[in-house]
Amino acid sequence: MLELYTWGTTNGRRPIIMLEEAEMPYKIIPVDIQNGAHKTAQHLAISPLGKIPALVDTEGPGGKKVTMFESTAILLYLAEKSGKFYGPSPAKRAKVQKWLIFSVANVLPTFAIMRQHKELEETAVKLLDVLETQLSRNDFLAGDYSIADMAPITRLVQFSDHEWMKTRPNVARWINKVSSRPAVKKALEMKIG
Image (tube, rainbow, N blue to C red; front, side, top):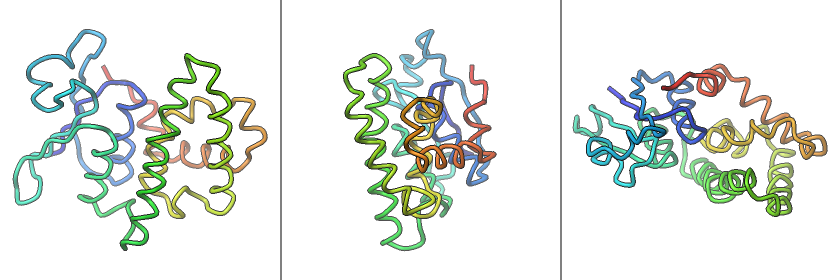
């Protein structure tokens, strides 16, 4: 059984998208971060930094229990476990990995900080230009739909009606296409806690 310890944040929804897309059975265990549930000894045993999301797979490799924390690590674990959205070959996986890491290392933090710091707008515009170029050649970031698309969508969907998107039709198309997938819609709209 897959147990996802999470809350209704953008970060907390990323693994839900993957679980839904891969049609993997799972149970959500809400961790009320507003009331300090992420700082309990029970949660810290799963996620040492006290962050959400965290995942417990009671039937991991070799039938052994596996715990995971950090949403990107969880996405990679679920992709490998399910055999979906990660690519069937090393070359395809390398493509997914580079776009996943690009999104996690650049897109996600920039857009998160941007909510509080307008001076990062120039960097965000450059990142959108990189995405626009990549998406002008591909339907999805790594060619086929993968976890590289799942990671940034929880943040970028919040900016989908922003002025910047009007001059980046491929990014807008991609956001619409990914966010309209049933599993993504379900994860983004799910009430958690």
